[in-house]
Amino acid sequence: MLAYIPRFNGEPEVQFKMGYQTGSAFLFTYKKRPGLSYKFGLFYNDEFFGNFFMPLLGIDWKINKRQRLFGVFPGYGTYENRISKTLAWGGNFRTFTNSYKINNQSGSAQTADYIRINDNQLGAYLDAYLTPKIVFNIESGYSIMRKLSKGITKTEVKYTVSEHDGLYLRATLQYRIRFDQ
Image 1 (cartoon, rainbow, N blue to C red):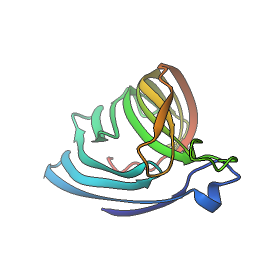
Image 2: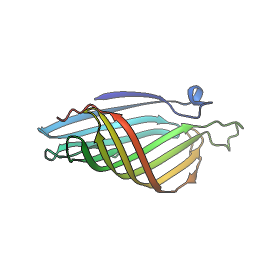
Image 3: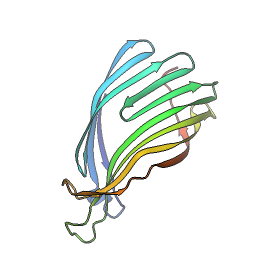
Image 4: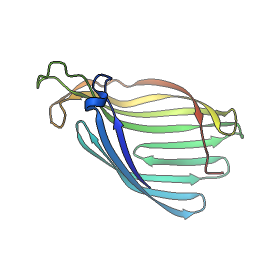
């Protein structure tokens, strides 16, 4: 798999003027046997704090009819346990590293012009399949080693804004197409 990832990240006033980032990823899949594949690759993004590279290592393992383990680390990992055709529960791990352009009104070299977010989330979820493709998902968990920092684009000048961990709760309505059945 090859991916080109163009995106605009930033506050509305500067998002489309100065908030453009480009990234890419490639991921190779090795199918060891039916129900077990490994993935290897690399992710790159031109973040406002500099070039961001991340090696990727993944798994897609159908443990049995009810249980699956899948993800591409260090980005995310999911354990799923299907209770029935309409209910499933499991656990998630996600990491985020993003930067967003902020409006630097003063133009001073002392003022930051981006904010960087590093977050790691560990949570548990419940899926309710309303139809075979429409899923109501509720997840709760804890944010671990969360850090927000500000800086000046492509320089070593940066400072920490916040290092607070905390609980999170997320509820979503999702459209899913499953390829594992």
